[in-house]
Image (cartoon, rainbow, N blue to C red; front, side):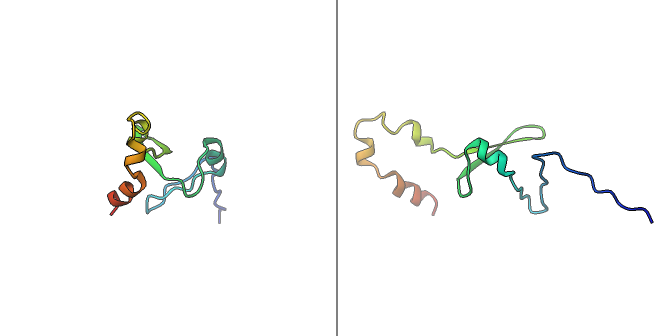
Length: 84
């Protein structure tokens, strides 16, 4: 019998599971400033390329630009209602 040689993955390489799940290398998480529990956005940026970035509210650029907006609008309550 011939022994099967398992190919070694390069550092930082991971595999997509049958459930489309990926385990992110800890070093990549640390260098990106992301951590377990962070809400992220996943977007296709080209053939064979996906970007993972911290999710930002579309309102984050608006908050603070309109006088009284933060005082009059409860953004957290609004976000909660959007997810229902």
